[in-house]
Image 1 (cartoon, rainbow, N blue to C red):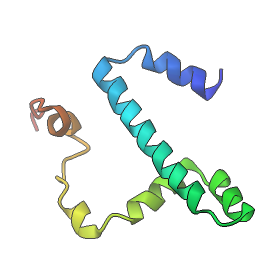
Image 2: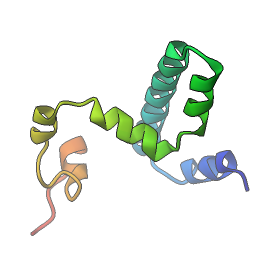
Image 3: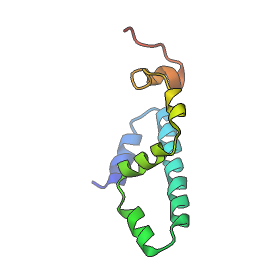
Image 4: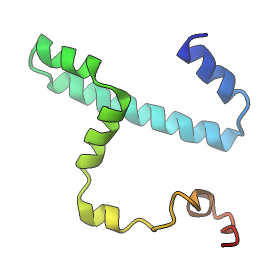
Length: 93
């Protein structure tokens, strides 16, 4: 099964709000990739972009965010993501 087929299979099983989040993220990544490709000066630059792993790409994007902006995020963001995104109650601690 290809990655696209697996992604489509998983998307068919999630609620619409989650599918929308995935779509938004995918569109964001496509825009960032298009920007990087248009900025590439040579075929070597394009080769480096195409061989970069997804995590390296995410780390590069993260490094562009100033540390004071990261400090504004709640310390329990990962644990209470539904609360911060959708207003769900925080689980009992």
